[in-house]
Length: 367
Ligand SMILES: NC(=O)c1ccc[n+]([C@@H]2O[C@H](COP(=O)([O-])OP(=O)(O)OC[C@H]3O[C@@H](n4cnc5c(N)ncnc54)[C@H](O)[C@@H]3O)[C@@H](O)[C@H]2O)c1
Image 1 (cartoon, helix red, strand yellow):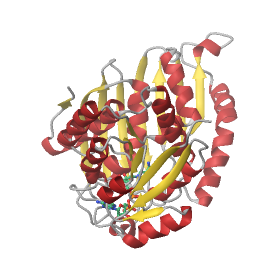
Image 2: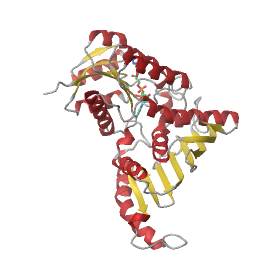
Image 3: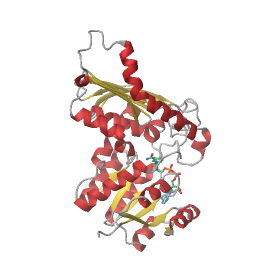
Image 4: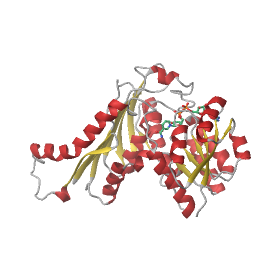
């Protein structure tokens, strides 16, 4: 039998325990230690999984035989800690965003090359069945020429949420507001489906919270393939409403709502040609209802139980487990994780481009 890979977690706040749950759910993985600068948080998580607590990363790296370290600390700390782990010869899984500046990301990629270890960045919604299905269809060119892609994130976070950690909503450690923290998942999916972004024009503002960074943003995008797109995001939409990712092409359209495929229509599946004015209205309703019914019920249920549109802690560990399993596969096969550093830098570059456009009132072109 192959030995289990030994994991350590750094950061035992909201997301650290989700990593612990995900690791515990995998037959090939074993949690052996956790670290938090707050000794009580480290002790609490360590007790739950009967592992050793540490209060510094350096002590955990020196004291434990580890294969993989999961970094779950404030976003602006990721670069320094990821580099520290990679230099110790261990593989790293780091939470999103990979980092919050171009310079930090460049440094992480350089150290990864030098150390030869594997680096994966959490973007758990890439592993949702709906995301995988839409991505496969894009690869098959089932949507025809892509013309428009939208990401809509009307979430709610209270002032108490921003006040719950000194780093939240700051430029220095959160690296931004609703875009860098909450919407990065949807922005990553949007660019994964639509392809690289070429240029951006954007507005951002802080309208309903006391915080440094933005709680509302809109951006218009031009993708490299010529398609257009929009991003509309806020953490001030009480009580937090369905996230939508919409992909429109000349031969098909798809809508993902709260991680479920709520609408899919492909020309290749039409028994007869659609008229010059598009599909008849009744047919749209029948077709979309059969997809939407399930997801509508689910999203109503999610709202009742609390979804991440409303509550950051209402998060399943399953997406993280799939992504950690993907890292284990990459280590065992000496392959590449699905979301490696090169893949994870893209959504951050789009977000930094949005901030630059909003600041300068100019169109920003990505390299
Ligand atoms: N993938 C997701 O869906 C998801 C969800 C929530 C958060 N996140 C990401 O996870 C990261 C952490 O977010 P959170 O909400 O868990 O934050 P948090 O504030 O709840 O937890 C962060 C923890 O890190 C600890 N910490 C800070 N500096 C440290 C250091 N130098 N060494 C060790 N521990 C340190 C803090 O004491 C705290 O317990 C952020 O990058 C965030 O974007 C991702």
